[in-house]
Image (cartoon, rainbow over all chains, first blue to last red; front, side):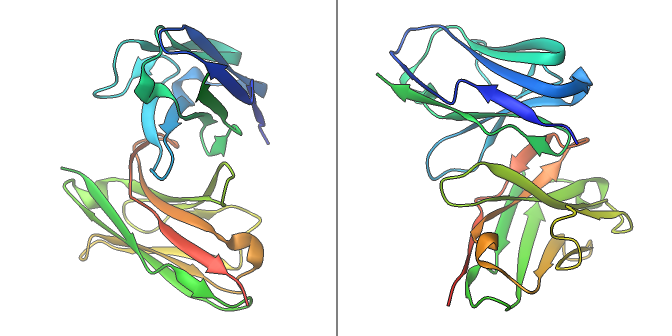
Length: 104
Length: 118
C-alpha cells in the first residue's frame, strides 16, 4: 500500500511569497494519477492539479505541479490571500495527510 | 452545471445504521464512477468506496468492508452508501465525488455530517 507523505505539515507565510509543497510517495507512482486538491475551512476540496502537472479548469496559473516517481511538488508562485488553505496530494485512492498554509 | 448533493447524515448511536444518498445532475451520470470520501473532524481525507457507471464494479476500503455497501440507481441519478454497525470512529463529513479517472475527483458535493455517539 502506497503512503504519501506531505511536508511541511504547516507553513506560516505572507501574501506575495512563493511556496513549494512536497509530496513524497513510499514507492514509485504513475504521474498520470498524481493529483492535488485545495480545501478551505468549511468547504469541500477543490481539484487543483491532475496528472502531476495539468491545472484543472479555472485554476490560476500561479499554481503549478511537477515531479515524477516518488517526488512531487506543488508550487504557488505568488501567494494570494485566498490561497491560505490546506493542500492534499493524492495518488489513485490514497491521500497525503495535507499541508496547511497559514497567514503569517 | 455539475452538481452533487448529499443527504442522509445525522446523529446515530454506536451499532446503528445510516444510508447516505448523493443526487447528481449536470452530466451523463451513467458514464462516471462515483466515490465517497470522508473526513473526520480536524483530520485529512479518506477514500471510502466507489462504484462504476453501470453499478456492477464496486470497491470498499478494506477497513470498512462488510459494514459499508455502495450502490446506485441510474434512473434516479443517485448513489447510496449504506453504513451498518457504525462506530464512533466513523464520525465524519462524507463527500460524494465524481471520479473522472482513477481517483481524479473533479467534482465534490458539499458533504453530509455523520455523528456516531450515544
